[in-house]
Length: 530
Image 1: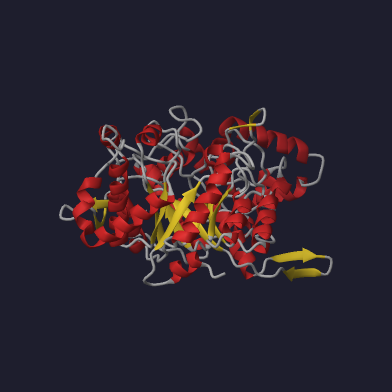
Image 2 (image 1 turned 90 degrees about the vertical axis):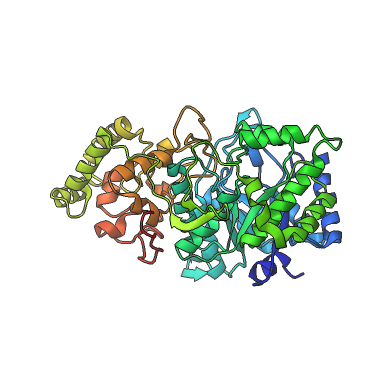
């Protein structure tokens, strides 16, 4: 069977339409039977290129999207499987990818995933071993024939054939959050993402912003927009930040509340809203739409598509109906008064002030004194590391280091430290999802998805620190590999000086970890963005 999804993505004139299905918990419950019935209707209808299948949304247990993908494919329609990383070690990531490749389930959307919630006898342990950037790198290596070491030396596995997508969330209120989203977007593309899918929102200027940003930095990747047919109950949950990353403003919620007073409980209004969004997204240059909605039926999906296509020629007329800015929200570009969208001119980044701290200043002084290869004490520290490595002094040295870093950074002793790379703040101890290459999509108003109102997003803090010291470009360009857990509970200082961690190339160690060092080919940001 041909792959309609990837064929549409690669067709210069194609517009890719998929429908999101949520399989739910259980094996033979109503939710799973509903997915199969929806797939049957979609296959017969012939207007969709794929069915997207979610992976434990909300962090709760659900049937495997890979398994349901095999069932969907048998019905004659392509599955686009969400591949969430919250509960997969890198070993399990490879295991699942091999199984999907064997079953010809080759279209993936790689996402960080919602933080784990309730499961058997309590909350599941979060994993987050690889982030989406690192996972895309792995998949691209698998597509090229993954090199593996065996009894007879290195060999390559047979190449896989995955098309891999990545997510981006432009619907952020603060400069710091938005900057983080776009630096991670660039890294995902550099890692090899074949297409992008936006998070869910209703501010059309934000949808336009993604396309403008890609043009500004010279990147050309197909972008699919999430288009959710929004009812009042779901809108109320999103407005209350109960669905991480999805934004429904107070103004939009009032509209939804008024619409539900109609005889059809607002159904006609929400279908028309989705159709207008379809038209605008296609008109402004999106490659497709990813349609979702609670209890949405296939005939309603068809209504959105048919009406949307009808409205495409006049798409610009609807732009001002979809001005739902967040209060005080930051935009990457200046507003175009004529169209209601964005100009190509970057807005000044002056919403978020840089924040110098005693901790930040002290850490930088120590780095420039001891850890920078040009530092005056670097040579002496490297000699000391060689002298005590594997000797009796290694254990007390490691304990002393851990106590210092525990007091300053809540060190978890991963042994592969990223402090130097991310504004001297630890992603392992201070980001619940351990994101080393940029933020997840779940923050709201600068707060962490896991601790809303209590703890700032780790990457917001990193941006504030980096901005104060003129280091935002470093956050933007360097792709960090995952920590090597063989180094867990060992001295990161010894590992650094002796070239055993991801900084090996920097300090003259034997081999640098893949992706640890910039290759000098990153797109340069236009003036005013770095």
